[in-house]
Structure formats: C-alpha cells, structure tokens
Length: 205
Ligand SMILES: Cc1cc2nc3c(=O)[nH]c(=O)nc-3n(C[C@H](O)[C@H](O)[C@H](O)COP(=O)(O)O)c2cc1C
Image 1 (cartoon, rainbow, N blue to C red):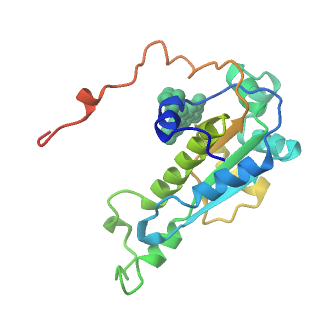
Image 2 (cartoon, rainbow, N blue to C red):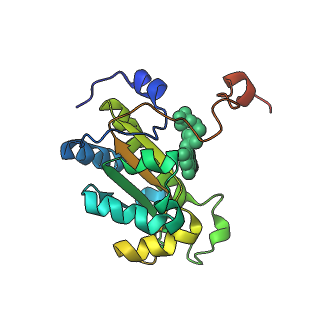
Image 3 (cartoon, helix red, strand yellow):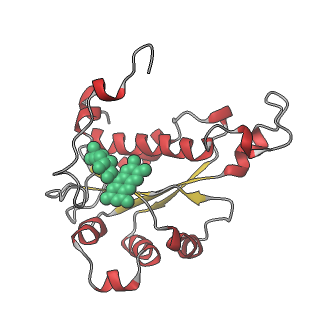
C-alpha cells in the first residue's frame, strides 16, 4: 500500500525503460488498475478498457504483435530493456461510449457530432487513467514507462488479443523492477524540464 508522500511520487516519477527479471506482485497490478478506474472522465463516461498482460507468454505476444520482425531479431537497447518488464498494461479508449453518453438527455448532443468536442475526451480520459498507473508504480517502488504502439501495428495488436473494434490503444505501459535506466533515446542530454516561468502565463498570455 501507499509508501510515499504524494509530492515524492510526483517528483520521482520518470519513465523507466530497463527492468530486472524480478516478477511484480499481482496485488500491485491490481492496485494500479483499481487506481486507474479512479481517474476522472468526461460525463463520467469511463469509456476506457485496460488489457492486463502479466504472464510471460502474453507479454511475449504483445511484443511480437507490436514490433516489426526485423527489430525482434536484432533488438536495440530500448527494446531489450523494455521487453524484460514482466507486466504490460494497454489502456484503450472508446469514442463511441462518449458519443452515446453525451447524447443522453442531461447533455443533449443527440447529433453525436464529433466537432462538438474541443479535443478527444475519450483519449484524454484513458491518458489520465494511464498517469494513475504510472504514479501507482512509483508509489510501489517500481518503474513504468508509457509509450506508443506504432500505428502500423495497431491492427495486428488488436487482432492478437481480440480487442473489439471500437477500442483504440492510446499507448502501452511497461511495469517492473527498475534496472539502470537508459533514459529516452537520444533526448535527455539535449532536453531539460521546462520551468514553471516558461510555461505558466499568469493573468495574460
Ligand atoms: C503520450 C506519450 C508518449 C510517449 N511515447 C514514448 C515512446 O514511444 N517511447 C518512449 O521511450 N517514451 C515515450 N514517452 C515517454 C517520454 O519520452 C517521457 O515522458 C519524457 O521524455 C519525459 O521524461 P520523464 O517522463 O521520465 O520525466 C511518452 C510519453 C508520453 C506522455
């Protein structure tokens, strides 16, 4: 259960791309997913779904279905580190749930016109749930990384795991015990965290 102050969880969270072989306690994965369902959602639609992969053969199927065969034959540092994670969670969004929810009488968008939405709230909600998964991993002393599934691989991934057509993976999250991290490919040396002064516009942009 909760081991850290919230501020420590926020400060310590970094994407971890290299893991040890040590398994992850299933109760911890339960807690991550339970926390994910505590995320806010537009209209309380909760149009998300999470694919939980925590058996070695399932994790292997994940990488086979989302990675091009040549990369699998000669995995780079990123893939080698990421593939060791014993748990992969795939948060998915479902736009149709939101269009139906907002067509209800309290919202009244009966035309189901997507142009009414300022940004895709269905993806946002899955992303908010994803952050809770990442933060729970940190709270449990584990590492995690959110990353994208290549668009060209989405169909093979969905087919492999029987994901229904209306669900779209917004990304995937590896979870495991941290090994020495490799950092973001090519980026940490040149990019730094932008300061509050740079990004906050107080009263007027
Ligand atoms: C929407 C999103 C997509 C990302 N995709 C990838 C990815 O495909 N591969 C990867 O290694 N990291 C990915 N990241 C992690 C970012 O590189 C990382 O969050 C960023 O460099 C800041 O580092 P930090 O999260 O460790 O503070 C992604 C993060 C987000 C939020």
